[in-house]
Each structure stands twice: as structure tokens, then as C-alpha cells.
Image 1 (cartoon, rainbow, N blue to C red):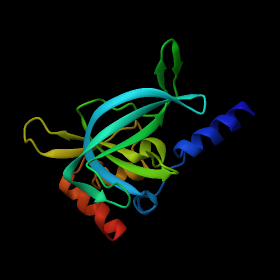
Image 2: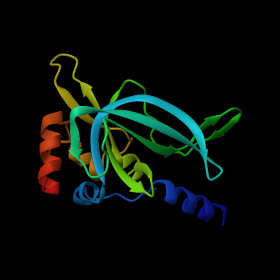
Image 3: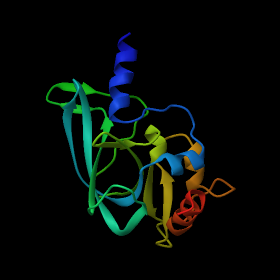
Length: 173
């Protein structure tokens, strides 16, 4: 009963999916697909749960799929965080770092954004040490579903440009 209430409350904030989501569903069902840098994070309460609110500065060319976001920043929520002595941890959900680059797949529920498919909706963008090429790396531990968007046929990371091209082809963007 408690788990069901927890899931229903969280589901109104952001979809929690532990099921692998096909690439086409991730692309087509996400309201926004954005590339940017996390500039702030804070914890707050939402329906008696603790959530972390992330603010992302979207890069000039970072609107991969755009529907509702009309500014160069967007805020979204992920379940879990710390307020005072209270802590809520949800095993498997991502924690993002300030000043790091990410691509996020966002779903909108009411006026709030959350990650599509939990961890499946977040990929880190990093420069390779010797080439300075930017590559897309899954945030979660498991390389499945949407993570294959960021991987080539051999399971290696693909470049940021190739990733964006692949997403746009899948979504007809």
C-alpha cells in the first residue's frame, strides 16, 4: 500500500519506469530533448516527498526537440535528496553534477518537468581526453534501451553530433 501511494505520488511528478523503453518511444514521447549545463540544484518538498530540482542552461544549439520551453533555462525534478536531517534515496535514480553537460529527455506533467523513463532520460556529454571530441555517455549503470542511442553497433560511445543526428532521424525532426 505504501509503495503504491509512493509510486502514484511520484508518477504525478515524473514518470518512473524501470522497464526498458525503445529508442523511438523515448524520442517521440518526450516533450523536450535538450542539451545544456546544470547550473543549480536544490532540494525541496513535493507532496511530502523530497525532490531535487535541477536548473539547466540550454545551449544556443541545444534544442534537439522543442515544444514548450521558451527560454534558455529549464528546471526539472528527480525524486530524492536531503533537507536538513531528512534524506530520501531512490536506488538507481541519477544524481547530476553542477557545471556538467547533459542531454535530458523531459516529460511535462502539469507545469513540472521530469526525466522520461527515469535514468533512461539522461545522458552525460564529455570530451574525450586525447581528441577533445564530445561523446554521449549514459548516466545510468545499464546500457540498454535509450542508452543504445548513445552507442554504436560495437557498444562504443558515439559523438555528440552523431547522437543528435540519430535522435532527429528517429523523431522525424
